[in-house]
Length: 123
Image 1 (spheres, rainbow, N blue to C red):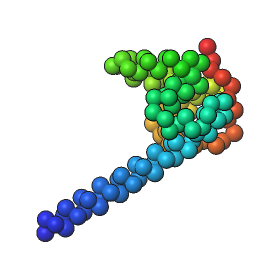
Image 2: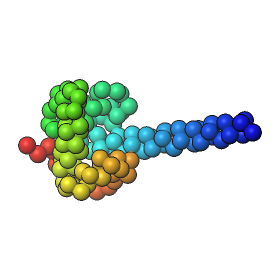
Image 3: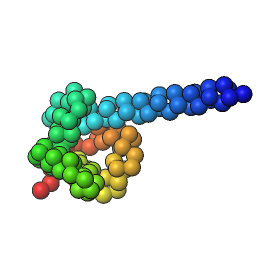
Image 4: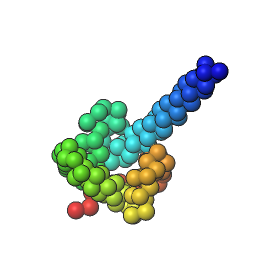
């Protein structure tokens, strides 16, 4: 009896892991295209830390702003502002920034593969 329950947990865990990996791949695909639209190399998406530097340079104009993400509590504010600035850099508004915050898989694909054109960071 316990074996069947444990196998159910394992199956659910595997399904959750596969679903999470699929979502991660879709985010990578979306951001790969976003980086290319902004003139950055698409492969930068798969390099840890460098991908955050590139994303901040696309959104803010200066990649070094990503160092603010190392400060507790400040990183939350900076993360929200970065979604807003990334949205504005592609000519989108506040509601699109909310989408990037709460549904990044879908909105990264829309931004990357849709008709949005990179306009540069707004200062």
